[in-house]
Every structure is written in structure tokens, then in C-alpha cells.
Length: 396
Image (tube, rainbow, N blue to C red; front, side, top):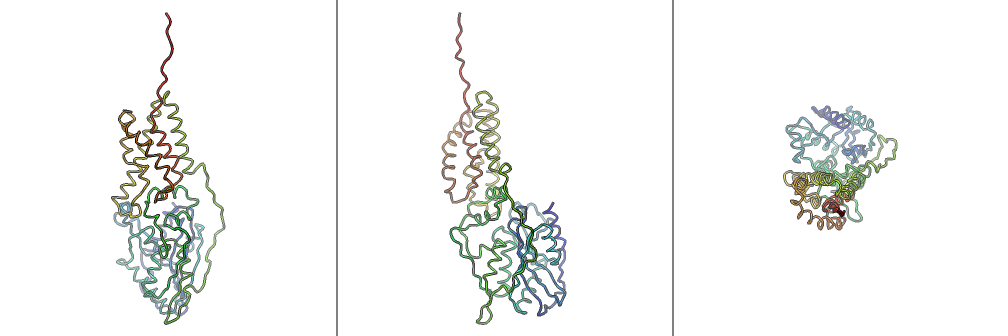
């Protein structure tokens, strides 16, 4: 409900442009980058970026926000599933924007930009034109076209490349996935979902402007940037302000609610069902069928997202090495006829140990909490224990 309420809040404010007759900004106007801190939910974990334009002379104080989408757009859920998600530029009063973030306990910082009157007006007009229905929509991408990446793109287009960006030098290897990990330390289930859904393409090295997909990194880029006028360069940021700083809470992960604990339990249950398979063979077959069917359905979903949608970052998903769609028929038939899957299970006794041995050496970072699950699949690939033969003797 928290997400739904916040979304409706922004949709209400973007129903119509507040700038039907955009005024000429006075010399006291300012243009700022707003950087909002992370929240509790996964979709809030990476923060948010927006542009504020304030003019006390004109009584203007609004926020332009590229992070808006409309549940009522045509084929919304189908477009979401296919990777054709349309986001748009929206606008709200700054007071309402700040109220929403204070209400959810999320920090808001402001960087007032070092722009002259002409530059401020150019950006204002650019954003106003992009509010028009024919201009406001854009095709969203998690990493390359989102609420943060649109802002430097807008700045470069409006100011004709006068901004000189100086991006951070990253020591070691940085990738989209490694950057996500920095922001999901206390979102283990969310991190697992990302690791399952997105493939090896997000493990490629990134640098420079690629880092701007995260609002905090964009904030750093603005701090280092300069703007060129004639033959002189000036810092892009004139002043830093803290508009709201929430109380500090120390979060922690509960192991007993974590994916690692769940999958460890599945492994122990697999070992127990195999150990008692001589006494209760139907329990072993049922548990094996359920686990293989579930894993196969997961693999089929990943394969379909890769092949049949425009979610480009789901390509080359190496989770398919252990979550194979062929597990679906294997799990189904092996419950009724053990011999039908015997050869396949024999191959898995070789294949799954290889996957586990190379788990940390693959070109894609696989979630380590999944290791017990793969180990459970390995245990269940072994033949059930045969009942002991009756060795009793009869006497005349």
C-alpha cells in the first residue's frame, strides 16, 4: 500500500501541467538537483533524483520528476512483463514532494547549481516542453534510462554540452550488479530476486557515466562537474543543502527469515527424505518431484524472460546451469516411474557438482544463498535406498 499510495500521489500531481503559461524566471531563480535517500522497500532501496526550480519573485517552486508511471496506460501490465515499460516526466509542488519523502522517512539533499539567468531559463523551458503529452514518455531501463540518467542527459541537451563531467575512478571491477549489492545489504530477498532475474550482462565492467544510474552516484558526478563559459570553467554546484535528514536506524538481517535459511532447510529435508527413502519411498519421490518441478518452472520463467521479452538485462542468465526447464518433465515422470528419469539423474550427479565447483568463477555472480538448493537437487538425484532384504530363516 505504501508504493500504491506514493504512486497515486505523483500521478495526481502530473495529471495536468502546472506550467501552462510558463513565466520568465527572475534573477533570483535557482535550479537544483534533489537527491532522495533510500527507503525500506526494494523499489526504494536505490534512492531517487529530481530537478527543482525555484523563483521567489514568480512564486514558483516545483519539482520535475522523471520517475513517474501510470497504471492506467494502455496494456500497462503486458508492457511491464515484456520490458516495454513507459515512464514519464511529471511535475509537483516542492512542498508536496518533500512532504511525501518526510512521511516515508527518506532523506532529501539539494545541490543548487551554478547557472546564470540564461542557462536557468533554457533548462526551465526544456523541461516545460518535455511535459507535453507527446514528449513526456520514455522507455524505461533499470540501468541506462531511469530517473537519474535522464537528468544529465537533459542537462547536456539543454546546455549544448557546456557541462564537463568528471566521473569517479573506480578501483577494482565495478558492475551494475556489484553496485546494486552495495544498496541491498538488508534486502536479501530482493537481492535474490535480482540475481535470479538478471543475467551475465549486468556483470560486465562499467565506469564513467554508467554509474549515474544510481542517484547517489549522480550526486557525486554533479559535485565533480564543471560548467564552461567562454574560456573559463566554474564548479557546477554552487551550494549544498540538507532539506530533510531522518533519524538513523540500524537495520539488521534475521537469518531465520533469510533465503539462506530457507534453502538450508530444503537441503536438510532432501537429505532426510533420501535417508528414510527405504522406509517411506513415496515421501522421497514426492519431495523430489516437487523440488525439481519448482526449479524447472523457475528456469523456464528465466528462459522466457531472456528470449521473449525486451528485458535486455535478463540475457545470458547462467542460473539456467542449475535451474533447467527440463526438470519439469523430469520431476513429473520420476514420481510415477523411477526408471524414466534414471539416466538423467545419473548425468546430474556429474553436472551439479561441476556447477557448485565453479560457482564463484563464472562470468555471472550467482547468489551464494542458492548453494544449499543446488546441493538439495544433487542429493535428490541419487537413487533411493533399497529396503533391506529379509534374512530370516525358517525351521522345520
